Image 1 (cartoon, one colour):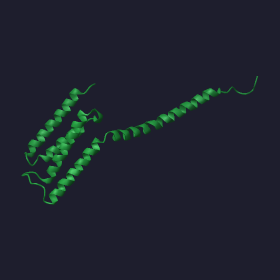
Image 2 (cartoon, one colour):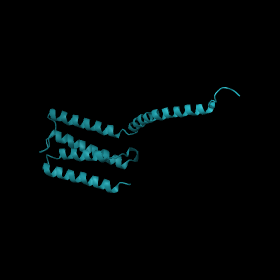
Image 3 (cartoon, one colour):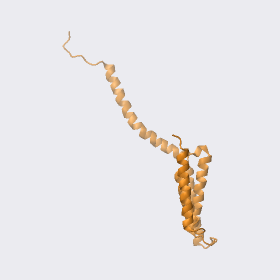
Image 4 (cartoon, one colour):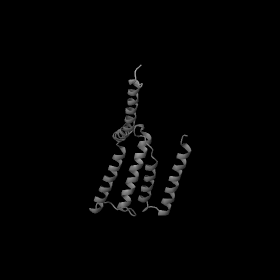
Length: 153
């Protein structure tokens, strides 16, 4: 008999090392895959960037035309109201595209609420402010209600 204590077989030690490696890879991979998914998501969906770029261009053109005195004057419509009105329309267009085109489908609740608020700001010159905000709150409430009723469990 030998005087040496029994040692663990070599394969068991290798399995433990493999498990350790898997754990470290699992810890690292979610971050990498999360970053990759986020990057891929925005590459495949340029719609949000496009809409906000168009809003900035719209605002710049409206301010430039106003400063040059070339902006046609509609009674009750100031330049900032025109900017918000255009931004609201553009965001509503984004919501419509997201609902109709499966490639760009994403949740639209926040965009819809922002569009309603922008349209409310833009229409203040035409309609009494209290009426606009009452209608805006009703529309937002209806959206939240419909979203809650139609949500799948």
